[in-house]
Length: 193
Image (cartoon, rainbow, N blue to C red; front, side, top):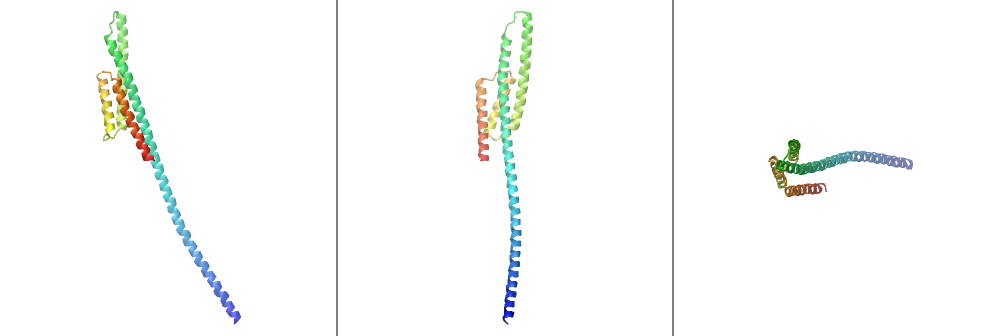
């Protein structure tokens, strides 16, 4: 009977160990499946976050490139305006010069033709630059943009009448542009911080 009792104790211990092993195995499998699903969700979430960060970075990089392009266009506008003012001054000076010989008259006419051609090319270049700037500055609700566009169009009108734009007027325009570009960079810094 002792043998039988010891066999049944061994058998019941063995059955308990097998049941415990099966329960542990089922628990391990369930835990592994849940962790795998959670891991996949975490990986997907990390991929989505990385994609959003990449898209955001690309957006801000494009904003920086856009601001640089606008800055270059403004620089071109100001440079062409300065040169055009000088050319217009020379044209006006040539108009008032007196010519004493026919040979001098022909030289004056040739020089005047070159100056008028240069002025025409600069005016065309300015109009092209203004068109490009207007494409970049599409936020017409922004008072800075409105002021810049109004000043540019006024400068173009003066050149259209072959009037010289004063250095003061160009300097004021430069200050408007600098203020606008500074604000754009500050806004971009705030958005990227």
